Image 1 (cartoon, helix red, strand yellow):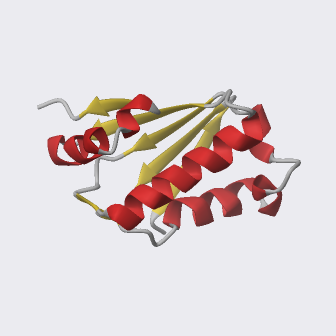
Image 2 (cartoon, rainbow, N blue to C red; image 1 turned 90 degrees about the vertical axis):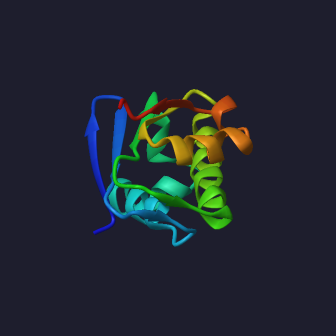
Length: 116
């Protein structure tokens, strides 16, 4: 298992357990498994969510395909919820934060760096 998912009311918590986000679609696959196949359909299970929080504590590598995976996750959730879902990335290393800032993902999500 590369992603541990829990749901608390209207918040979905994804704890990334793999050190790489490289486009392997672990997050999308895990969300689809957790929420059910209808999560990607028009009658999406994500519509009841208000926030998706992703814990990056274990992540030390992010490439362009990983950024694409994050964008796809963001688009899937915000398209289905009509933009009502907020994204928060927590425990983000300085290195990963720099990459997210470079591609302007910090404009789409609340990105919180790891506290030293």
